[in-house]
Length: 265
Ligand SMILES: *[C@@H]1O[C@H](CO)[C@@H](O)[C@H](O)[C@H]1NC(C)=O
Ligand SMILES: *[C@@H]1O[C@H](CO)[C@@H](O)[C@H](O)[C@H]1NC(C)=O
Ligand SMILES: *[C@@H]1O[C@H](CO)[C@@H](O)[C@H](O)[C@H]1NC(C)=O
Image (cartoon, rainbow, N blue to C red; front, side):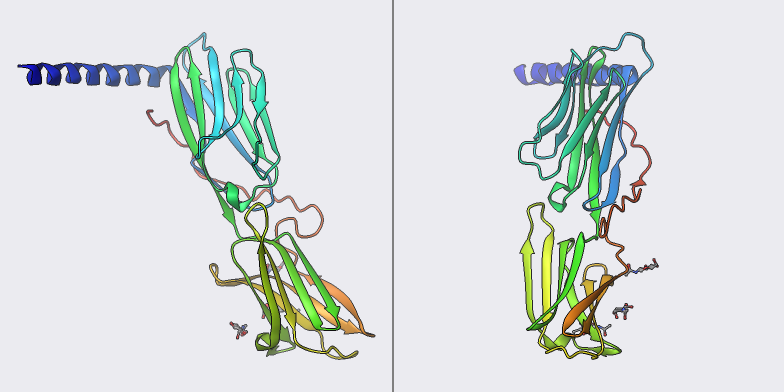
């Protein structure tokens, strides 16, 4: 019976595959963290390390590959690393410790770069793959408050995720008087959010507070004071806690989720 024969052959092949997978699993392992959560515009480092219980491991090819299949950084048997930035928004760095670890650093991670990153290995002890998922926390890059003839204006750049500007004067919520509200998508997928109040500012008048509301988190991310003074804006930025908002604020806000154990390919 051909059907029966086919079935048996398939079973044998299946068993062979399982056996091979089990054997290579013992020879070499790849370790990556399951996920990394970072504020945007900061650097994120993806590490992929090889562990093996055996002597004589020889790496033929090792790479960090984005989920869309684009190879970002790789190394061949000569040990020379190559980066392939292409049209990726971030500047990248790639480093390799021979037979041990391949590290990819995205220097200013952008919303469009969220997703899965695959570490792939080909070696004389087998083929392996492991993934890290990169997710971004809410953030902004800068806030520029100003006063024009039109009235007080605030521009927030590098905003992620979507945000809205709420206006206050003292205890009063004057958001209803905001006139121009614009949003522009920046290259990496974050937003520039601008809002102006329909108010002539008068010297000595109370200052205005523009606050960036992030609907998805249900919280204000930052706020800025716009102070009318002799017809000019004296500008105070409050609570510049956004990522890289003012000056270099590289915070090690990287939460590591326990090391992934190995997946069979
Ligand atoms: C201010 O007004 C806006 C628009 O009416 C509203 O969405 C927001 O919740 C108000 N904020 C506070 C703190 O009252
Ligand atoms: C500006 O308004 C926000 C939202 O109500 C508030 O959290 C923040 O403390 C205000 N800042 C100042 C200086 O009034
Ligand atoms: C403002 O700064 C204070 C102290 O630095 C912090 O506790 C608070 O969470 C900040 N608020 C916002 C909206 O970032």
